[in-house]
Amino acid sequence: MSETLLLSCSKEAFLIGTIENALNGVEVDIDSIPESYFKVDIKIVGDEFHSSIDGTVARSLWEFEKSLRNATVQMLHDSSNSNYLTSEEKSYTSINFTVSAGCSNLKADLKPLIKSLGRGFEKMGTLGKICVVGMLCGTVLFGGYLFGEHVEKMKEQEINADNSRYKMLKDAYEYSLPFKLAYTESSDRIAKSASNAQYVEINQRHYTREDIERLNSRSSPTQPEFETIGGKYEVFGIERIENNENSYKVKLRKVGTANTLTAILTANKGLFSELNIKTNAASIGAYIENKEKVDVSLLSKSTKTSQTFYILEITPVKEN
Image 1 (cartoon, rainbow, N blue to C red):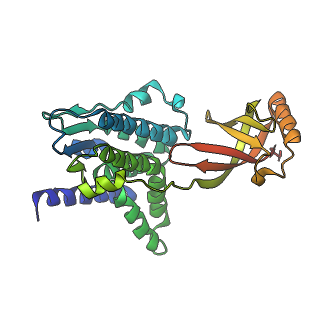
Image 2 (image 1 turned 90 degrees about the vertical axis):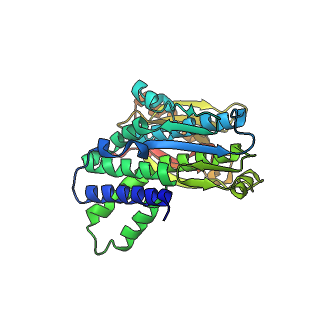
Image 3 (image 1 turned 180 degrees about the vertical axis):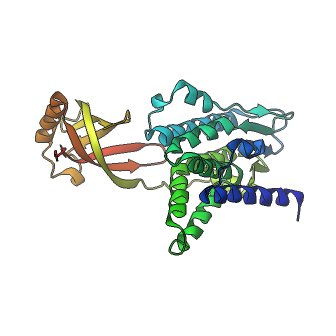
């Protein structure tokens, strides 16, 4: 077994062992996790990557930072609006790459960012935090597959296992998903940007020449994903969508939080054809004036680059 493979196996075993300890109630100091587990090491190998990186690669690194920042605000504040990040959190999401001689090797340290994301899981204390941090390190090192498989194995044993252990692992995994998705998609984007490279390595992920060509081949458009969500909100604004007299943008704030979103109220699509748009628009104005809390059912339409909310139903909160 090669030295590289031995190192890879030991890191994998260490992270799984760390999370298992947390699940069993053994507190672990996050600072005991080796510094190398938080680092991104990118190697781009090819004839054109000895003197500099081109603008396309540089842009992919900027998008890498932006994607992780978006994941951070989603995880810490349950919002897609980066304005919710504090000054301290924004500093954590500022990623600095160092470039070695030859400009084919780039490195970055994600430890401040990953530790800050662990803070978003404080409801489960130190044990939940170490689960999250361990999973995020696993994503950086192995691309995120490691703990998805581990969760599935525990799920199979759920009947005989301690349900609280499974729930902690499942909650930590689901909380970590925005980071995993952002990191893995950004890694693909970096490899794709080095279109003439012989190969690209991002920690343990190896992109061959064939992988890079596949990433750059024309792919069929992905279909949007739809999900229905609901909750209690306060309405703090409504405005007509320009050039569309039957559609409105409604500004909502989730009750008890600072999280806001804008949802569309429209009668122009078949899905919404039964809505009485005029009555709803007038009612929404009354909700704002009376500062009345409302139950809202939303349809979320997500693509790789955007998320749009549509109002399916909006009604006053029923007082007990």
